[in-house]
Length: 203
Image 1 (cartoon, helix red, strand yellow):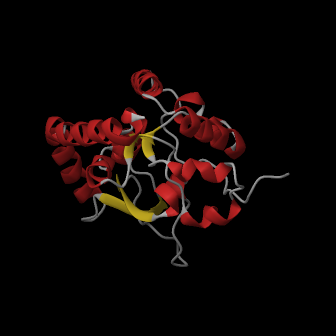
Image 2: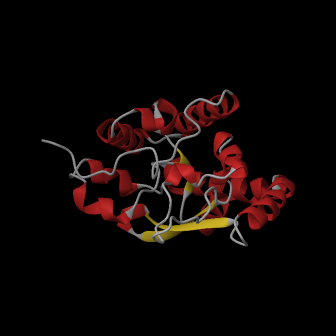
Image 3: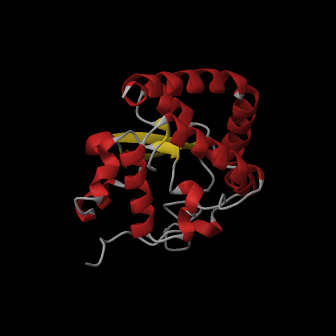
């Protein structure tokens, strides 16, 4: 399929390139604000699983501070979300730096969300098919419930996407994502904060 093998990557590259140019004023402003709020650390870096199980470093805006309790342990995640960080999450602005991941070829605009490497050992054979394509900023699972659905249902949506990948499906996901962002539906969620840890599916 020409779209899957050639055009999708071309569209991703162009979207990342022009997207970064268009949003550069907002991008720079957020970097400055988050630099101030997070003591010089505007970005959040974390290792995630990419295509074929390869590992890469995802880049997001840092929405939480590093405050610790009297024992030196980090406070609960939700207590560390800053005001500007909450604003970023509400409008999905924290995802913008992932355009750099797309530019580098680590990610696609559309695809299964990249998850933590420790989950690799828990996927069954069908669930592991989600790694047959590049992970994305948004995907079929994200426009069909995001973290309001179970891990199992999320992975079914991911595999469905892999098996039905097409320009029309990608366009549908883009339009649904825009609608969710504008209407603030299922936006202020995080696969690392609001979902319980994935420990495998019960047979």
